[in-house]
Amino acid sequence: MKRPPYLPVSEKLVTIRNFAYDPDPVSIAQLARLRLESENISCFLAGEYFVGTYWLCSFADHGVKLQVRQSDADRARAVLEAGADRAAEKADLDEPAETAGPNCPNCGSSEVYYQRYSRAFFYFSLLLFRFPLPYPKHRYRCDACGHTWQRMSPDDEAAD
Image (cartoon, rainbow, N blue to C red):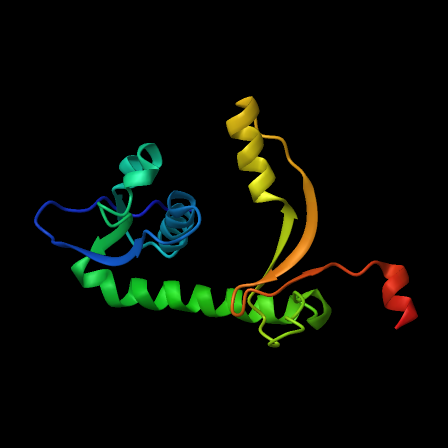
């Protein structure tokens, strides 16, 4: 595979995407860079090492910035959007409906998360023993209405 040519000094760089709010901005920016380089589009990741080292301060620098030549900006955006569309289509096809999380029995919201351990006990043990002790909780909590409920066991589901 032919490596894309290096950027000339006289051509201006344009930021086409910031990776500040992603779960792992450096890795996702690297994947986007590799996608563009596979299409022979020269690109540069600005702030990659800063965000990798000082990840708590990454918002101050607006995260990792993917930059390309001004003449390649439209083509690079099209390549990244096409890749995102293909990934979304594949995720829609691969994910069965049963794997979606449970809905809140109180309000029907899908903004539900699973609490595996008790946070209160975790922090209390951290203060008391200077070592966190996990205490199993096994509950679901709705972010929309604050309702909490226990997970049903397979025996309870069979009885319904």
